[in-house]
Image 1 (spheres, rainbow, N blue to C red):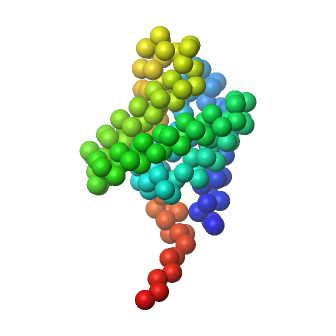
Image 2: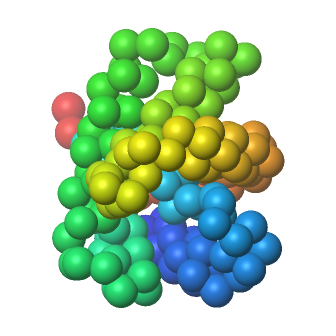
Length: 165
């Protein structure tokens, strides 16, 4: 319960940061911190454990950005499913190769998210994808170590599984 509450508070904080502070700091190319968190968690935990987090994050992003409810839910769920599926095949350990793989998945998730939300406006603007992907990649590199430490801290509070023999 503590882990779920902590993740909800972190997602709420990231959404508030994306809505209030980051657009003034980065103007048009603010990093998608919630998307980065979803990609990181689905690469580490898999889709089966992350889909409730993706749905909750999608609803919060839709509410705070005044978008159609459910749009981000679908996008985050599909991205989490794709990343979880690819992570099972390509990521065995999270060494240097794993970091570059997740970084590539962050760039691809950014492009998919941008295309799904603003297809007509940004399909012909290749430099938007480039700048947005670079900003998200830099944000991922900056947040990778704190996310790993947070994951280890929250891992201590996981509910023990009952094993009956």
